[in-house]
Length: 141
Image (tube, rainbow, N blue to C red):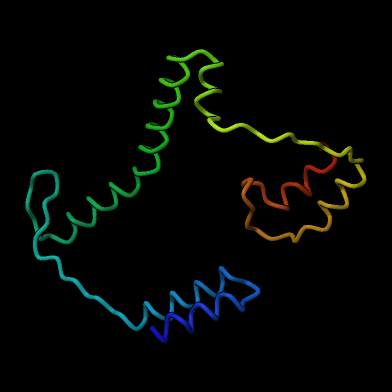
C-alpha cells in the first residue's frame, strides 16, 4: 500500500508521466522475477518438450498475428461496407451527435509556424504522423 502511494505521487508530480510509469514498471518487474519451466506443450495437436519446436511454433504465431489481424479487419470492413448503405454505415459509426464545430480561419504562415514549433522526434502523436513528416511535407500542406 505504501509503495502504491509512493508510485502515485511520483506519477502525479512527474512532467513526463509515460517515462515515469515505465521507470516504475522496470523497478517493480526487477523485484518480482518469475521463472517458469515449460516441461510439455501442445503444438498443433502434438505434445512436445523440444525447445526448437516450441520456439518455431511461437515464432510462427507471433510473426503472423499482425497479418491475421489486418486480414480480419479488412474482411469485417468489407462485410460492413457491402451489407449497408452509406447512411446506415454513418448512423452506426457515429451513434452520438456532434456538437457544433466552429473553425477559425488560419493562414499558411500560422500552420508553418505551428509545424516549426513541434519537437522533431521520431515518435508521433495520436494521428500517427510524426513531426518530421509534417516538416518535410509542409510545402504541400
